[in-house]
Image (tube, rainbow, N blue to C red; front, side, top):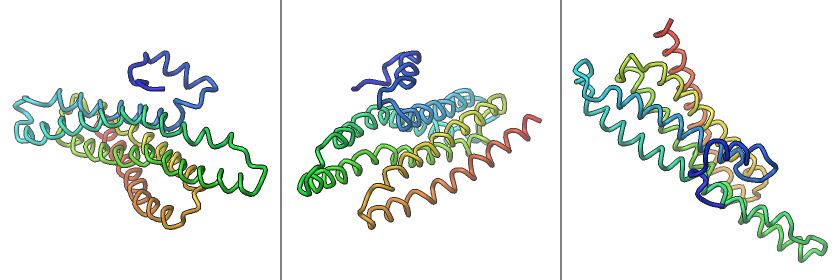
Length: 210
């Protein structure tokens, strides 16, 4: 399965609704994240060139470039997540009657788990970066689009948390303790800080709109 980002919205939803293994939580997280960062692009495009925000022009141009790159990366992770899950799905059907078969299956499972986890790891990292862009846009972006900053950061918090859940479900089955610790130590601070930052931005936007 590939080119999922080229599907219509309706097809994506129908396939997600079905019993098909992909798109699943990871693919949905990547899509929601790309939508969230697209709103950062919208706010940037509504701000750029405006005299009122001239002092932020260089920042807005950088934000626009970063938002486009993040959107493209998150979209690409929809296919990556689907492709990387396939080897793991095949492992579940491997025979495990004899000790030798069990050992072979476990070895293949462990390798496949580390492949399957890579897209969710990237979703967490990219969503966090995108939340930071919204933090800037909260003060540097057009006030006419501040609600879109709030909407974008809500999407990105969902992507961040969903990505992390997909990391966790793989980590719990990985027996390489050093690997598990390395991934957890790298990502958990991003998740905690990202959640707090997203909530702060959301509350700030609400106060501006009240």
